[in-house]
Image (cartoon, rainbow, N blue to C red; front, side, top):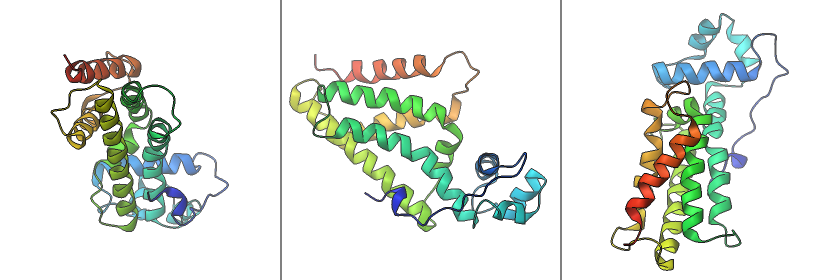
Length: 206
């Protein structure tokens, strides 16, 4: 798997009052989502924040550094969740681990919703985007392996291809970026439980 550890280091400035690295990154993600990454320049971001371009470069070497860190924010925690569940020494049945991955994926998405929204829009047009796409495929593959293991246990029906199940499960989770709002009627835990129940009650062998 290609990981963020293999990427060139990101410049991390000491920060300036009102516009530290985290604030600049949040503004960049918002702007990338609104205008599109390709259509957004460092100048656009500086204008959005009311600072000079040099203030942005104080924290980041390039626009691509901003994208790399934003996508890592979306991917790193989810990668940890899936890796822990997919490992050979992971405790519990494959079915229980699969269900937990889906539940935790919802919580990760809610916690990093702007960055995940950006992740779902990348198409591999830059080296950073290619790396993110590879990491997404790795997650799909790991989830499919858990599905296969759960089928082998006899917990899940065996008439749906595991790769398709993986894509459908992540598709359900990813759809939250289109409608979920933190101040809405349901909190992250309620949505996670409902999504897992909907998905797995439909997949259980009867």
